[in-house]
Image (cartoon, rainbow, N blue to C red; front, side, top):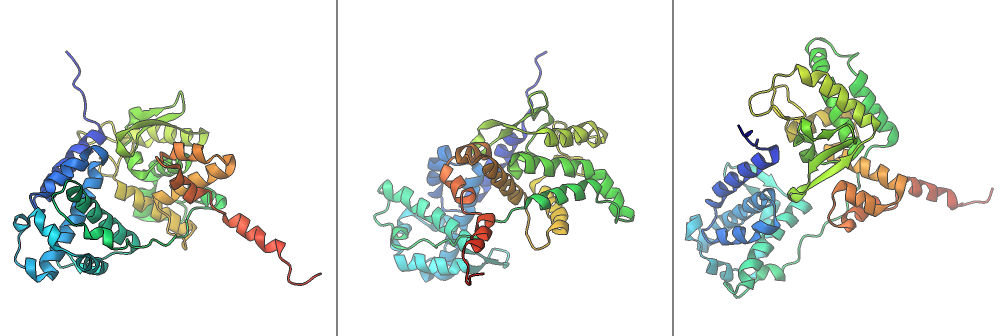
Length: 355
């Protein structure tokens, strides 16, 4: 009998996201479906879901703030309504985005990046209909996009990395009762996850999507599914190999997984594939004990790896390839800037008084 093909985590995620997107499209004007169908070949389902949420906010803005559309339902909007808006309406929308209430009357705020993402979604939406001559104007092009200010790149220093791993490995001494029981139950898993993130620079979404069959100890590699769905082998060193092996041969074997989760590499305490939020929480839990002034997330561990790799090799193209960046300029922006060490050394070169 031919063995039934199993559905992978990423295949199931695509199905779930597709169904979620269909529900979101019901909250948008009917003509919006044409736009989402057109961008499907060049975007992920996750991106389209984000765009759908952003456009829902835009049409809610029109019904909340524009008297012309006060009593409109989503399907009352026609594509020609986009032509009725002017640059000033788009500017008012940008102002609205800074603080607004959602459908549950909860206040939502947007910083620079949130503003830019929502404006990018609206600009892309308008451009689709403008290029197809379904509307005659595109007021989004007459409004300046929000300016993004560079943020300090947060990462762990070498000594902080060592302290973090030591804490996970040996940090149960000061715990009592239930805390110690939980720590011992999750220690091997947590150490394997954090070591893997620090030792390969993979994304947290790539980490939680790993199956145990994706780990190749013979060639010291893991098969990850990158953004956009492409597969890639990422290689690891001895420290990662030991942490993964200890977990797979140790605590993972004691888990009886819930049906449908048998192949997951990392399990939650509910015996299911661990989720992104759980990994974010465990990284935060350990990191704040090592460096309380830094907000360390799984992405910051990725930055830590990228920085270390660039400092060791000086090869920005290698860093871009290993991290899965499609544009090397993205990598260069984050990892090829003047580092703190060089800034500190600058202080030695300028003397205010002669000795």
